[in-house]
Length: 299
Image: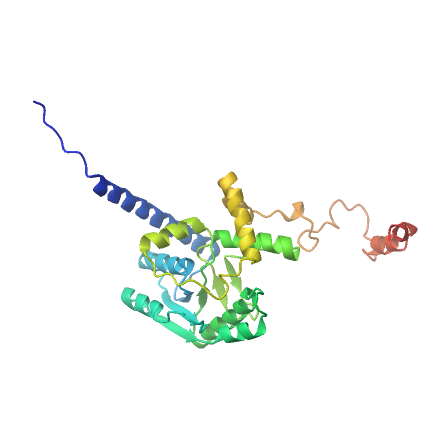
């Protein structure tokens, strides 16, 4: 009688498959974040990086991947998690300190009651994000200056940058997004976004696999009329119909051809094909057109 081999345990196999998928995802995140850091020179030797931790999936993932990369990075740098406690009613202030202490990460908590300010200034039902963001940014910049941080790391990801591009396109008539690295308006701070190449779907999957203690933002999360949410829904529909579209748009943000657009400040259209000296007043054409009778007839 031939030997009968036992069937593999389906539960154990599923567990091994899940572990392999988590490891693959973790490697992809490390590779993408490491590539972004290298491409944009985000972190240098001796940097003291302030990792802004809100309690959401994005900032948890940011800190987690940076901690993994720190162990084998080609340069030595310091990571400190910083949370801004905005004094929102019901905010579980114990969650982040307990989590950070549990994984042995240095952390600092900023306490500033921005919630009362936003609630007082913004009428009920109106979007609070703009004012909340300005107050939060001011508090974080001030803290970075007072504690000697050389870089401020934020958890914005690839999809955030694409959504911002369309928000600026639709509502502000400009082509701009969230740069992976920028200097603050006052010139004192360098802000980095190491998740610039990472998709939100991968971040969501990583956060679930790691079991981060997520803290939802109840200040603005219930405002269904947010423009950013509308754009996100549009992008999700596109991605569903045409998988890979968000990634293509994100790649386009790093593949700019000024001569194929229409900004004379970025490309010298006046000099293109010029055969004679330019007129003394380049606006003469427009000035002349405004004096013609045709305009009056169209008005």
